[in-house]
Length: 550
Image (cartoon, rainbow, N blue to C red; front, side, top):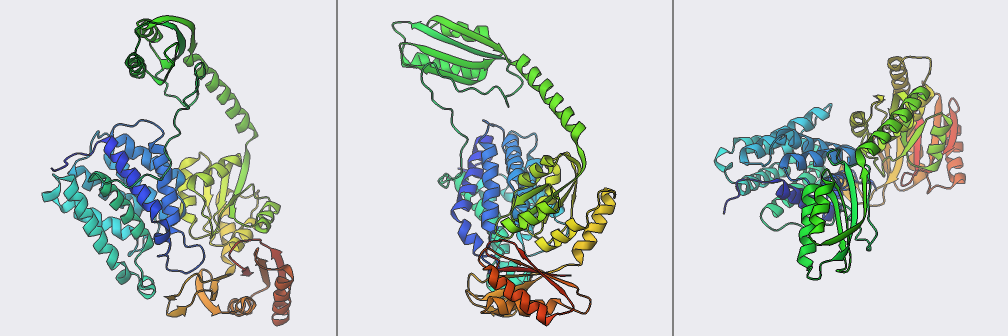
């Protein structure tokens, strides 16, 4: 039997199934990361992003397809991590735009949602690269819009989407030589296909077992105990109504209590009916407290009636919030700086440079868009400069602008040393535009090498890499391979230093002893007497050294 419409409940189940399948297959998607560093995280970032979307979907009993799609987009935006997660959030955002105002989704609208998802994702990326998740969603959108003969049956449309998506995913190595050399398809594209396959499973009646978090259920409570929260509620219900049916009718049955609960749910929200057949306790937020009491009287005598005016409580909270906002605005400073770093030494360095907020993250852990937006707000500054310090965090930082009212400036710092140099160039007497220019120029003077190890055998950029090889990357490009950490560090430094270099800074990680780091610095100082050599504790995980030359 053909399925011609997807309602809100079905869409919710489809999103949940897609999220669960991605969470189940996170490690397999991570393993497709071309670069064999110990932090391949496309699957992790995408699964955390869509898990955040599911939390938002489950927060309220949404019924329309538009509301479900909007909740998914909102949650994904807040929780998006890394470039792959941000792009996935933008695809969901595009879905939401197309679905706006629709109670149900038909085949035509499904094609429009795919197109909107592709367009929105492409617009979010400054320099879109083909052979990635962007290509996969674009080709799917093109074929879905053209498949007019299948638009009457959603199942047929989804089969087409999966077939087209799988076909273009297999072709991604032809578009990106680095994928072909590594013998893998694009990890972001694979992550998207896993989500779509999970959605199809729910559509056809075989949803993936949910392992993503549901909304916290109401605490059942004991008679006399109600779980209530007068904040974050819809404004449409104004009276918190509580009472007790102290003397139920002798013939009252369990079905009568169930009927009372359903009646309360129809006239309000947060309905709780707790009964042990000797007493029934009722709580509901409603605009019809009298009607609630009238329903209860049908079951017996009522006592302990308490009716609170939620409208007045909201007014008081809003007035208090306005006062606090005004006070905070009066204290607001002109500038704040947010930096991303991981490692106690690096965090201390940024704090000593008067960086207001240091967000945990880097190669091994990408912060979410919401993490970055909250850090911006915590600075209590009118103008906030974000130093992402990682290529996989820049896009998330740019999207954080939407979740804060601050004037946010994102500097495209691709490494922690670039961020440190930028922070050193900050001048509170300059305008935001002048600071952005000066800090960016300072960051671009820094060349950064990072030393880590390979987690698997692969071929990359014409080089054969073996598990546990020591890799030296220069400005995020694999440059040196070896077996000895110190030797790789010396070899890659040699590729950075030139006649204009004046400073070499070595940040040693948590797995390097200070005496070994000092020995490296002594060797560099002897090799490059024209350069100052500084040693700093970084404390970063997985990366033995970060070396900056400027």
